[in-house]
Length: 443
Picture 1: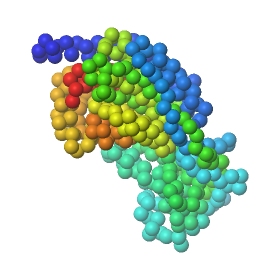
Picture 2: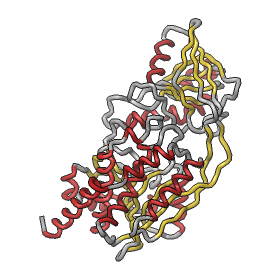
Picture 3: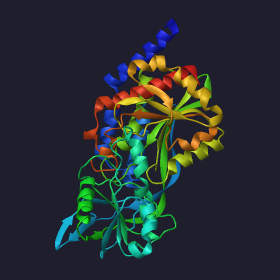
Picture 4: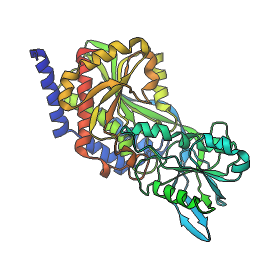
């Protein structure tokens, strides 16, 4: 290793030393998750999180400016009373663990009752048709594939029934839908998440836990089962919210932006610790660590807390629109939105015109990151940074270990107590190291 490479390696070691020994990302995350709690876009809690993170960013000495960027977000309200899902068969009743899915219509006081029809995919609806589905409660029970090592792949294969199930079932006259929670775990936690009606008539859309989904499926093998659903969710008028942005201006290439970010909103259950408080505090820690080490970047480093990733991408779209209008160029955008678990590496994507040289240059950093067991490969990015693709920079996603992520995703269990502080800090160190290398070498 050359003397210059040794100096870079030594600085990366100092990043890890500071992040693990003196990093404060756990303190910020505990406040976001435990004190503020669930931060549904447009809610009072989400605005409290906006002002809290702006205050933290402004307190870091090398931040040149920190500001709020307005964006319009939808506002959905779960309602004042807990959802009820009660199944009935042969004179017996069982209460299921349930949560309304995001944007779901409410039933009101009268509730909805109907025979339960189990399906394993959206295409099955067409085969059954209105004759079999009208007035029924459709139960989507396609499980996430436990054989997929990369759990995000299993999620991607199963989540269509959660997002589009109600819309598709409504077109055949279904009264409501129940959806198996998106996790490989067998537990009693229902998982919420976005669902979209499109131009379909809105019907109640409720997630049930995997244990209850298995129980219901078993009963349906030998019984006619009816379900009673009651919930009070409603869509309200859109409101204004904000992205939180802070930056350090570069000394020699200020027009080349390196972005780090996560989304500040979460669902209203739990504390949004892994999804995505972790990504937000990872990004703040990048700035905090560089400040502590006295680092003066060559390129502009910008930290962005995006609003409304969960329910419409309002913040990411508003950010890209403003950036494009200003003629900005994001050389790299690094998003953390996969939890606060042990980092495994980074995956990237870009416009086809520039991707191959960018990837080759990124992978030249292997010699610095391999000692920390971090890979650099194709195939990533993130939802909030995706709209920046037209600027032809590199879009990068932090890839933590994914095995436990969907145990907590969109549930009341997504709280700070379920975050390992050392793993969280390792993620921040990994992101800071990659920012340093891109700033030093470019792409």
